[in-house]
Amino acid sequence: MNAVRKVRTRDERIPMGFTEAVKVCLRKYVDFKGRARRSEYWFWTLAQGLVLLAVYAVLIAVTVATGALGSVDDSGVATAGGGIVSGLVGLVFFVVALGLFLPSLAVTVRRLHDTGRSGWWYLISLAPFGGIVLLVFCVMDSTPGPNQFGPNPKGIGDFAPYGQFPSGPNQYGNPSQFG
Image (cartoon, rainbow, N blue to C red; front, side, top):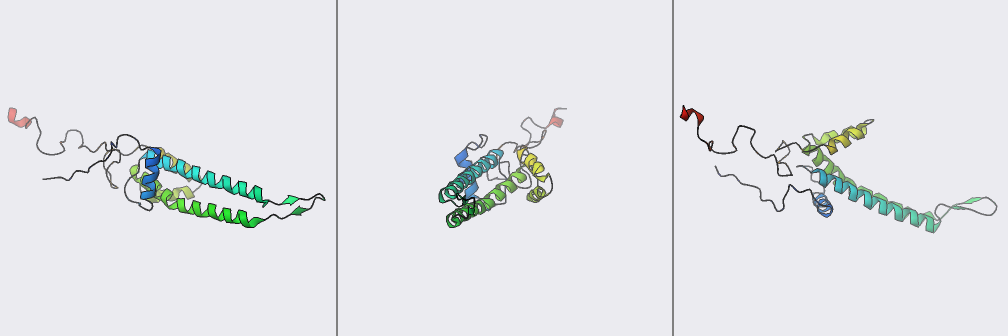
């Protein structure tokens, strides 16, 4: 039987780098199938946090620069500020956050698949302390070898169980033939 073997373009035993993980997550924008390594998940989470932090910093800078927070005049009366510019920047923040939501959801589901769990476990984050449970699941190591969601993305553990041979007869012969 001729088996088709997956061609690997890189050594999958080495964790993904930052830029590679971001590229993979953006390429698999709404791909909820398969598995994601820990490095892919955590580098994406870092990248998402940095992008949101940068957009939020711009939002604060524009809000302060335009006086959108308002001010207090000499008599102690509060005045409203110009909120149109900060409203637009806030809208940009919302659009960026919304645009990052789907790839984040997809990589989290693939990460859950890597630990042998269904993506529906994501909903546990809606329960009190469920976010902690989801965090523990995302920190856990991959299930070795292939599981119901696909092959191990690390490329390890794809071997037959102990005592069994991946293909063909035992290379040492049949034990019963010796006696």
